[in-house]
Amino acid sequence: QEDFNIFVSRSFNFYSHLLAFGWIQSNAQANSSSEEPIGLSFIDIHGKHSSGHVQFVPFTYLEIASPKPLYIQQSDYGLFENALQESRQNRLTTISNNIHYLQDRDYQGFFLFKPIFYEKMDTFSSREGLFGTIVGFASFDDILKSIKSQVEPLGITIKIYDISNEKEKLLYSSETDSREESSAERQLQNQWARNNTFKFGNQTWKLQALPSIEFIQRQQQSNLWEIPVIGILVSGLMASYFLALVNRRISIEQEVQTRTNELATINHILQQEIH
Image (cartoon, rainbow, N blue to C red; front, side):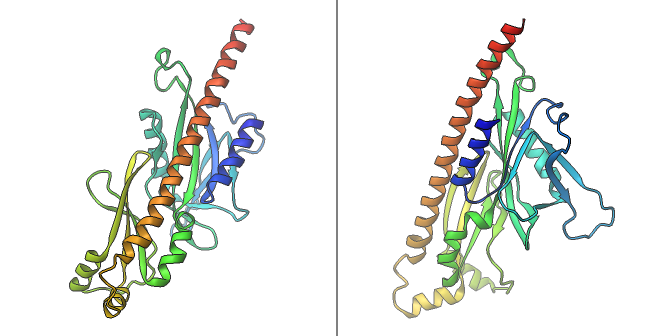
């Protein structure tokens, strides 16, 4: 328990965008000894339904980074459950689809699931060999905070798409202006847009920097539009930030695997001593 507390603390330090971090043990009785069950509640954050039903997901261990209450949209519970089961079946780090949550206002985020299995998987089925699942909940806004602060004043919108299934599914947009552009304006914006594509867990994401018409006009009027301003500014920021993000995640996963193997070995020794 102490080692896991240290691991969680380091994870929050590494990932400033993490809102919640926890552990779901595969043993169904893992939470039975807790007087007050801990976990995440999926509720109707907008009050559109009057049933008042709350979907509670129990955790063996859970830490919330912010002192503010964390409310997750009830209708997104299915996305959580599907991604959790997918991670267990495929034995891979799995990312959920877009999740809506409420703190001081509406935000968008996603769950990350990392299943942990016993060391000797050849003697177990996938379900029997599962030790537990590490669960993180992250905020798109927090991930892109440093990037947005530099590019939004220039008139650049940041968008994230899931293109895993050869179809673009919008996961996040920093755009707040709902003004409709003409087809000619959209075509011009797309010509100036810059994209970065990378693997994240089980998904392939495309990050897009989309300039406003005003931004393009300013660049053209200044006779500097031939300089790839967006490419230099946005692509560099995104590539460096997300590369660091993924590398840190990999290093943490390796640490978790090492710790898990050590725990499995100790558990095996204890079982031999008992018998």
